[in-house]
Length: 65
Image 1: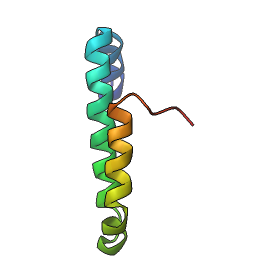
Image 2: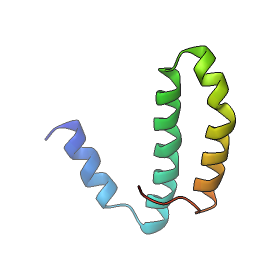
Image 3: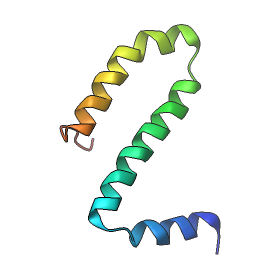
């Protein structure tokens, strides 16, 4: 079984509360990786928008696109 398959299985076993915490953690982790790929000048311009998006997500105001 691959690492990804093991992760998928573990995520499926999480309680709703644990899944919610994991979802927030992964969202922030993924955003940090994405930001790290931007040139510094672009990343600086987007800091405010990113902070606002994170706050909306944590407040439950995000929706899937």
